Image (cartoon, rainbow, N blue to C red; front, side, top):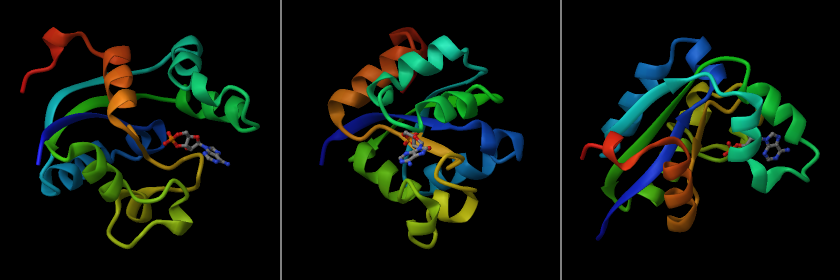
Length: 140
Ligand code: CMP
């Protein structure tokens, strides 16, 4: 299976509860390697740009409010089948529907405060990684 890179965010609801290490450990225990990581407090403009695909959705304003409410840890994860593996360990978007043992089942508070984000496909991974990281910041 191919070695892939994917983009991951530990969202403000989780950083505020001091869960950066606990969530990163779950990612590492699943076989993913953190090859880039930084803590950012995103501006409204950055959040609106990152989530532009959702701008017509009714929850967009709330999403931008939530994502700018505190620090986020943005990461690049590398590993075999990293995109699908990360989505598996994250669990369903709505924590009420997430499987036991997933990050969202274990830590998320609600669909809006769902602790993590991960890319859903190779093309979005590429775009999302480039949104936050220069090539020189990714050290495999
Ligand atoms: P994420 O994977 O970051 O992608 C978009 C985010 O919008 C999603 O996780 C949720 O945190 C947030 N969101 C808020 N309300 C909804 C909703 N009703 N349906 C889907 N996503 C929602």
